[in-house]
Length: 388
Image: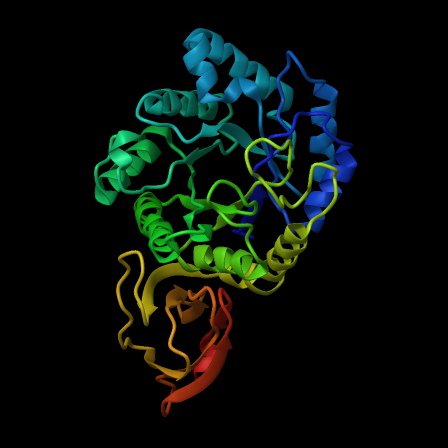
């Protein structure tokens, strides 16, 4: 299957029993967890190996969070020592069948970009059978103060250059403004703009697209509801993402105003856990396998366009969309199945209201229509069987 569900994990190796942790991740619908943080100077290697063993038993592969493979370590110790540490990390864990790849770092800026590039190359070359992971900043107004890109187009080119120089197999970014308390329409549009930026970079280079989504209230971001969780998943899928991370899973301390992590600081599952568990597993049961057999072609918007994506118009298969109840913004994604036939998905991009649409297809002999109700963030999947 092509789709992966992950989460950010900042807790240290030994934080909790490994078998219990993996059961928790499995219950949440996670397929590609981040391991607990590991530093050979502070942690027991046998605990990390036990965690990987438990992941293998559960049918999971994991992103290994090892201090020796981070680009900040390259900046700190220099290339020679960094290469030595990476080789040791690969020797310790790289041959384990549950390892997907090593975590190289998060959010490189203009001062650390080249360290991230070089660290990524070193990690990839040390373990060419694995997939290194590095997460990028999202684009926003004033971004040139953080990364050397003044426009969305310039950032796309910078990402394409990163992928080509490093040989990366996937590109990832984090984006949480879709759950902002203030200026919600503006920040939601910023979120969608990043799907345009990163989606173009991914398709031009043939790599996978991952996005980090919000599962914890903090700063000016509200605690996401189940509608928010569903909306985040399917808006990502509609724009071509094949993996997503929840930020974040465990509540560590009372620092800042972080609240309602899926697991609270006393180890209790919260209502956020229930929401992501349900929506993750719905996606895996009803959509992931079907969409894994499809190729993403394009996304257009019916109703209010967002993120600079084009507006829907009649094509050779989908003749018309009519509003029956309440006009909203709908992401209309066209896919191609394994036989080359068209598939469409429809995601209600409104955060508050459902809509009812009439979809009119060409049909073999005469136009064929079907009516669909779509709640906020819901995805409707229509294949050739429903079009003829």
